[in-house]
Amino acid sequence: MKHLYALCGISKQGHYRMLRRIEEWKVKESLYVGLILQIREIHPAMGLRTMYDYYQPEGIGRDAFISIGLYYGFRVKAYRNLCRTTFSSPYSRYKNLLVDKVLTDINQLWTSDITYFKVNDKFYYIVFVLDVYSRFIVGYSLADNMRAENNIIALKMALKTRKQKKFKRELIHHSDRGSQYISEAYVSLLNEAEISISMCNEVYENAHVERVNGTIKNQYLIYKNITNFDELANELKTAIHTYNYQRPHAALKGLTPFAFEQYIKELNNENKPNLPIWTCDYSKNTNPNQTILQF
Image (cartoon, rainbow, N blue to C red; front, side):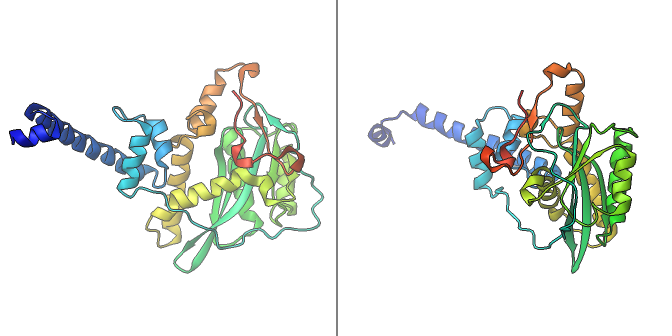
C-alpha cells in the first residue's frame, strides 16, 4: 500500500481523510434529498432554484443543490393545456385600460380568467380572480360548466376577501372578452362595486392570471390523485391556500403573496414598489413574464 500511496502522491492519513469527507458528504446529500422531498410534499412542482433561494439550506451552494436535485430526478415536468375555455365576443365595448399602467398598491388591478381541470373523462372549470400587485388570489370558483354564475361566485368572494363594497373606480377588473365577463349580471356587479372594466384584445394581455392558472394546475393539482368533484374542490382549496400563504415569489422579493401584503402595510405610499403592467403595445417590446416590481 505504501508504494500505491507513493504512486498516487498521497499519504495514508490523507486517504482516510478523503474517505471521511466522502462519507460526510453522503450523509449531507441524503439530508438535502430529504429536504427536497419534504418541500415537494407541500409544493409538488417547485423548481430547485426557487427552493434553494427561499429555504437557503446550510452548507451547500445553489449550483450544487440543483445538481443533487437533478441527479435524483427532481426535474419539474412541463404540461400543456388541451382544452379551450375562452369564447370571445366580437361585440365587447370595453377597452384595455392597462396601457402605460403602473401599480403602486393592492386593489388597483384584479385580473380574472377561466381554466379547466380534467378528472377521469370529465372537465371541470375553475375561475380565478387575482390581485396583480401582490399575486394574491382573492377569489375563485369551481363548477362542471362555464356559465357566468360561476364567475359571479368568484367575484363575490373577491369582494368579501377585500372587505370593501365600493372602490370608487380606483380598481380595474381586467379579463378576456369571454361571454361570461360581458354578461349583464357580471357587469352589473362590477358597476355596483364601482370597479372599472377593462378587457384585452390578445391573450398575452392577461398574462398574470394565465400564469396562476398554470401554477395551480400544473404545480399542485396534477400531482394529486383526484377522482371526483369533491376531491377536486378540497385539493383546489388547499392549493390556493398554499399559493397565497406558503409559496414564495421571486417578483415579490421572495415573499409569499400574504407576507408581501403585510410587508407593504408598513410602508409609506412613496416607498411602496411600482409594478409596470405589460400590454400589447409592441413598441415597448416587453415580456409580460419579466414584468416585476420595481423596489
